[in-house]
Length: 152
Image 1 (cartoon, rainbow, N blue to C red):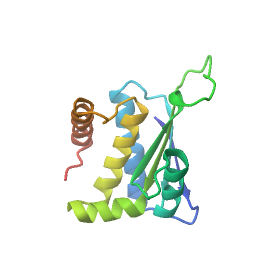
Image 2: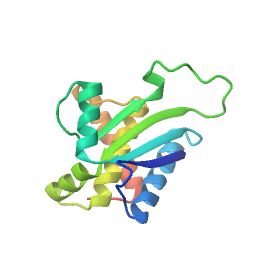
Image 3: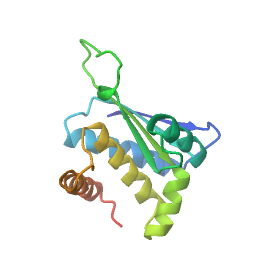
Image 4: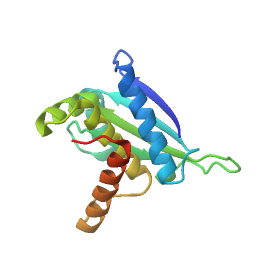
């Protein structure tokens, strides 16, 4: 997958091995779901920034761990004649990921990649609104994390 990683704020940083794993996870998801040539944007951020986005776009006045913005669900015009698909944006709060990793008793790397996978599945049309959808999405998440070799 053609993945771009950015930081907001730009002063935020992450270790190279985390960035490499984010790229690898996107590539594996791309292979599994037939979107290997798709375009993806991953933004690593803090609680303040993701809180503002969550409030603006979802009307929820608090920080969250991950947000997904699917291009195919937007009002943007379709890209005609392209040999790639623009999937969209996944935004991950590194602060929330660190807190959740500690809370759940697993690594920071595992939590960030899990959040990325969760966000990517949303971009691919998966959801967890009802129990059936939730079970299906959880099964897909587990399958991908196993394929990545990243356990709890």
